[in-house]
Image (cartoon, rainbow, N blue to C red; front, side, top):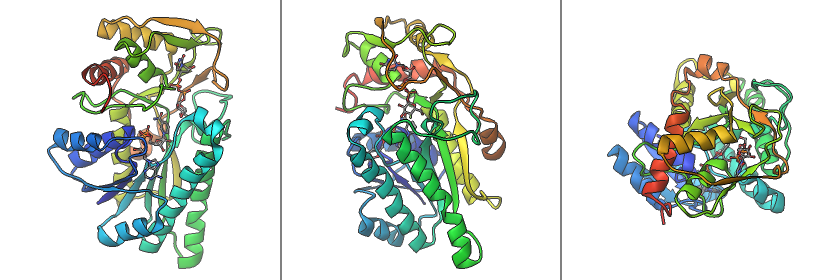
Length: 344
Ligand code: NAD
Ligand code: UFG
């Protein structure tokens, strides 16, 4: 059984589908702070399979210990956490409290239960302001905001576990895959689950879809004077279904005889850079719907371009993204147009 923390959220719910489709039993723990139980109902509808859901906070040590006692868990995927960069600047303590303490409590429960197979949701944000592209996993790491710093601190904390295990037991049993996501977009092709930001979206794709559906007047394009193909910011967008499949591959690797040697980082992206205007134009063309936009000032903290070298994930996880920009914009719109107010 796979314990999925934050499994009701955007990436978690898509991952639950892929796990169930691959015949894993799934146990979700989620506080529902940033998600709806409806997402999990729809996961069951889509797959025709059921999962176990416990509403609770990963920072609750008693709860976490009981999960490892009560269920035959053999690996954990840890999505639970807060993820809004701007909010993390305003509320750094809230971010450190949730992201760091949840991971700490989870790892203590795992250690006590001797279940040491972990897939952690990291982010391309750990590369800071990239100096060289594409980004390989061994490039220098830095943080430009408290959210990114929380991911960096967690990565470093996890890196300390194998040596301690070896010291205590003569051999290390921790296997940790740090999955560094680039820019997740899209939705399940059924249109039943997708990204449902509770506030005004920070990210490009939900802003585009909410503008297209009439909830926002126009998209603000943050800067057109970057040194990129058309002056707008370039990112490595990855379809959330491909991303979800990457988690299944990581779990399979941890549970295979080969395994992972201690802690290993993997970039999950497509390797392709797409500009803001390329994304807007592709969305408009594929869905035959206009997205009104206006060029405004650069957003503070944004980098010009960021995209991945995905060779390691291809070689070691036997994973690569299969879906392109067309599926990303079509599936995002399919979800938003069928669910104009998200799960509400
Ligand atoms: P999300 O907010 O949709 O999902 C996170 C889930 O965790 C939510 O369902 C929320 O209710 C739950 N949660 C939060 N704190 C919790 C706690 N202490 N205990 C239990 N549940 C808790 O976010 P997402 O986009 O699905 O992101 C999942 C993970 O991936 C996060 O760790 C995020 O930082 C990381 N990530 C996301 C992106 C992105 O652009 N979406 C990019 C890189 C990394
Ligand atoms: N953008 C706009 N208008 C908007 C929103 C975004 O022009 O309304 C532009 C940004 O300037 C950027 C691109 O669209 O050029 C993508 O912006 P997002 O906010 O969607 O994504 P970011 O790359 O800024 O950040 C995302 C996640 C972070 C994560 C980072 C690296 O939001 O949590 O990817 O993984 F840290």
